[in-house]
Length: 557
Image (cartoon, rainbow, N blue to C red; front, side, top):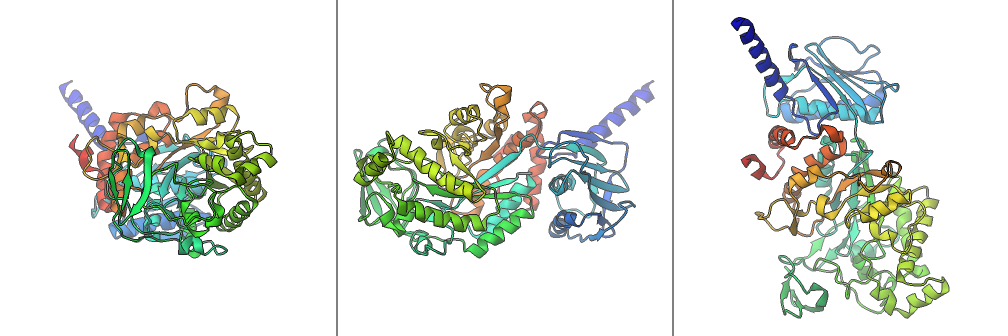
């Protein structure tokens, strides 16, 4: 009996030891670990086989990853029969139950088989396979013997990057997309325009990048606290004066900017498409348009004013002008959107719509005349009129608009998708009107907020701990079962006011991107925060292998 008990304990120990090797983020729907079977060994004789030419993209991704991080090159072959030993096989089975992201992964001593409902599912299976590899460089590339069934919880799993406040080169944007791919994210929200810089080449309006893509400096440090709404915007040498506290906002006086040519935009789109990520471009309107007005002042409510690309962050309502809703402005926006739509295959165009100060329209006789001619009772109705006009044009080109939740003001455009950032209220209201919703509440999913109460570097003043991201559920309990179906998914946002370089971007998103990915992919009942933290330790080793910067304070726990 003692011998039997010892053997049983040894079996349990070996099983647990094997199970600990499987640390996948996001956690798959179902994993069965076959501890009794030997692992699969990847070596120079291993082949990647696939029957469908469309799987070459995923095969290339796996092969490139193995070559880059483990110096192993594998042969890739189209094969009529996906069988054999020492092979990794990729196969499409359209009869597989589930959504487009559904896949299965089976591994044993002789082979690995990834079967999916679509090319997208094959790619997700590859990402899981990558996380079954050793997290550190080694001569033995072993894959544990497992059976995995998996599919995403939400159809929209997004991440945002603001390149207006600080510009990031194409090479890093591609790297950012790779980070999203590793975590099975499928939408990249590219915030290309804002007050502080216009980042996309528009051939019909060259001054957008000649003038609007550059500012004379950037604010040093954080805003000095309360009273910001009372700013007296008096530009002095490298400083801005604020009252009533008479604080000084200093700027660094260093010219900052940059933009992406249309050829570079196409290059990034193609790169993302090979990772099954849709890029949603954002062209801000009617507010967050100071870079536009610096280039084309005739589009503002003070057409004779010399506007500048701002050097300080934030919406200073008395100074951040908005677009005048004239026919000339709509013609300009339609021209811009025509070029944007021609570039981006995405079915969706984000048109902003947030933080439009109504004081400018209220003070403008031209705007008031427009409102009267269109029977608009107030500036909220004008905001709705503006968004409706843009939506009608975008819809005519076969696309759908997405806007921040302020597009609800005055009445929601018929086909608009709402991105709810001021909490969940806007998203709940939109879902109740049968509109698709992307949840991205600031207090839960803004990754520019500090990870800890005391950070080692400058961040936005608010705090967003890892656990808050992980434990967030995008589906509000206030919604009925029918209304919940309109919650398309959620998105993490990274605003770059205090993020000046790629390493800081990585530090701010990792490991919160891991928590976001699991929140969006894994069934709610399967989530387990302590287990997530355990798996995160292995993920950190993988980040070390990939030379990714992350917040190491989580290693202390």
